[in-house]
Each structure stands twice: as C-alpha cells, then as structure tokens.
Length: 297
Length: 269
Image (cartoon, rainbow over all chains, first blue to last red):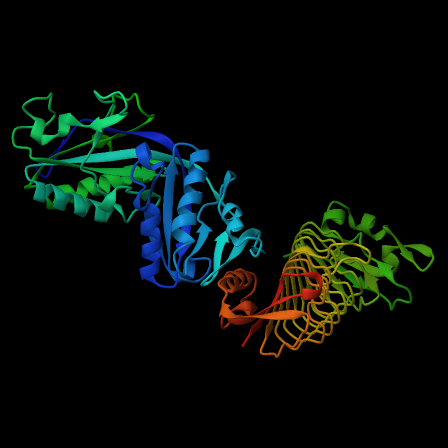
C-alpha cells in the first residue's frame, strides 16, 4: 500500500493488555495545572523501568470539572491493578499533593476501585475531613496553603499498552517534523496517551539483549548507523527512524490515533518520509494486533 | 404522568400512621385492596377508605391532598418512587427513607427526614423541630440524602446527623447541628443560639452572620474548594442552588471544644 508516495508496510503493531486509571487534576491556573500533571506523568514513559506509563489525555474546561476550575485528565497504565495502585499513590502523593492549588478526582467509573485519597488522607495526621457528596467520598487534607481536596477512590479499567508506529525517513529533520505533526493530530483523540516525552521515542527496543540482566535493548534492525553490520530492516537511503507509542483504554481509539497520525504524515511529509512501519514481536507478546494496512483502508 | 391520588375526606380527630402508603408497598395492590388496608384511629382499626378517597394509577408515584397535619410517617422507609403532598403533613415525614423523592407543597411538622438514609425531601414552606435528626434514643440521625426547606426550620435541625445535606433557605431556631457527627448543613437565613453544641465533626455553613460561640475556636479565613463541588452537585438537583456559595473564601470555626470536636462552622460573607 502506498499513500501519497509513502509506503505503508504490511505489518502490525503488537500491543498487550494493561490496567488503566483516569484522574482529573484541577488547579487555580494553567501554569500550576501543567506543573502538576507534567511532574506526575514525567517519569512514566515505559513500564520497563518506570513502573507505569502515563500521560495527559486532554484539557477539560472549568464547566466540566468537579470543582469548576481548569482541569486536565491523566491516564496511568500498569501491568496489573496492584502496581497501578502503588504508582497512582506515589505520583499523586509526591506530585499533585505537593503542587499549590491542585485538587484530584477520579475520572472513571467502574466496579474495580483502587485507593486514592483513602491512602493519602493519612498525611492529614488526624486533621483530615471526609465529605460525602453525591455518593462520592472526598478527603479534605489540611496543608500549609489551605486544603487539598482529593476523591477517596478511583476506578480501574482494562487498558492496552504498546500500540505504535515507526516513521522511517531520509533525514532526521524531516522525520522529527513528521513525528511532531502526527503527535499533534493524535493528541486530539480521547482515551489514549502518548507516554514518551513529546509523544515520540527514538530508542525503540527489542526484547532481550546479549547482556543477561537486560530484558530489552536497542532495536538494531532499525538503527540506521548499524545497517552494515546487522540484519537491518532499513533501506540504503534511510537515515532516521522515530517511533510513536500509543496506550489507550480501547482498541478503537488506538486504531483511530494510528490512522490520524499516518494520514497527516502522508499528507504533509511525502518528500522526507519513505515508509511507515510498526513494531511487533511476531504475535508472541500481546493479543492486540493493529494491522497498518487494514487501519488505513 | 399518572399518580395515585389519595385525598383526605374529613377532618381528623386522632392521628393517623400512614407508613403503609408508600409506592413500594402498595405498588402491586389493586385499588380495592388499598382501600381495605387497616389503619389505627384512636383505639379502633379502620379501613383506609374511611378517611381517604383513592383514584388514579400508581405509575409515577402518589399524590396526597388535604390537610394531613395529623398524618404521620408518610413515606416511611420509602425505597423508590415519588410522593407529592399538596398540603401540610404531620411528624416523621420520610422517616428512614432510603431513596426516591418527597415534595411537600406545604409545611411539615417535627422529625421530618428522621434517620433518613437517602433520597430527597423538598419542603416548600416550613418544617418543625428535629429536622434530619435521630429518633429519640437512637445514636445516629440522618445518614444520607438531601433535605431542602424553602421556609424556616425549628430547633435542633440536624440533631445527631451522620451524613447527607440539609439546606434551609429561611431561618432556624436554636441548637442547630446539636451533637452532629458528620454531614453538611447550609443555612441561608438567620440562626438561633447554641450552634453546633457538642458537635463532633461535620460542616455547618451560614451566611453573613456574626458567630460568637465560646465552644468554637476561630481558625482563620481560607478558600474551600469542596464548597464548589457541593454547589455543583446541588445545582444538578435543582436550579435553586445555583451560586449558593458566591464566595468560597470563608471564616472557619472548629469545635465543639468541650467534646474535643472537629466540627466546622464556615461563615460565608
């Protein structure tokens, strides 16, 4: 399949099941809101070493937040509910509780719950106050600034991690530009996040390594500087490959993000980009397969 | 919209207990069966039809008509549906109610919403003493739901209240939130003396008033975000709550210090 001169490889992105939660963070100003969510989702690029994957899903207007202030929704993904609970607790405790003017609420409603304020309330040392509003419990934790308001629990849902596309091109500059444009478009879609910094990752990995302690190492087949000494997947003129990783809470929105991303690349960057591919492990890693050509039909 | 209309036929000499007449209990009964229900009147057992005329069908709920100020326990332990009362009611309206809605286009007497667990009770005029309280001898008052009073309330509103929201648009008399355990009381009008006496936790919000209670400590002024959360929730129930907290910057008092309480009185100005 070729779209506007760019080849869409006959391959698929392989994704795996995760557990996810959505939080709504609000604050007095956009400045502090951004500080809080950036800090919370900053070191949350890959479960391999961060414990979770996280990112900003969308901005929500004051009329749609529980406290009438500007808000952002954050999606956090982990391999199981137990790890998710640990990561949510650590990140809310260290990044949201500590940031001036913020408040934290659950942004999901399912039967499976994990602690949010119910664990962080102990920081109040007995001075915390619970408040039940509309069958939801909130904690008001006294802090030096005034009060930190946080919902008692948040819900857990099934998620999918590891959706991806590889942008393959003839120059670093062009591939980066194409990646940036794709990220901008993909971020408009709800229920997904792009967990890596700026949504783009340059160090795509393969499973395993020659070193025993490493579970993942550089994807040498896609490294343009190793074309001569390794079994490469790249053509002669390829100088750069960048990956966009997508986590989401359903297959439909991940597929839509892939489609939108590829569409914008094919439309605007047909000179520098040669092909779009995807990372997979032969179907052995996960049950979710996003076939690029099927998505782009 | 079809309601079962229950109209009082004559003036009552003795009090009536109408706890049987809730949608959940009479929903599957025929009109004849409802009319034949036995009810205590003085020291006699009488049929419902001796006092009330019954018409309509119970699809959406029940409409009571007439002066029911001697009729107690209307909506007792109600679990669903709606009751509309066009007139005044007696004591214990919505006693131990779990869910549903009661609208009173008139006034209610004492113990309205007593031991309320959930649902909404909306009173268009005034109410008596012990609004949302516990039954005498019980440890816990209302533990959920919403009580909205458009007029005034009597003494000891929110007595031993455990959870839920009471909103009084008018005034209240003395001992508001007496022995309150938790929950929220919002008063738009004036409040009598001894607010929050022996209060353990919970929130009383009053507006534009001086608060001089020796059993409470002043804890400064600050912004309370939870007030906005509360306002948004109440706004969804009724537009009357729109902008009930024009400012969330309030004075805060904590007490009752005599029982090491952590109850709070917030003064909105």
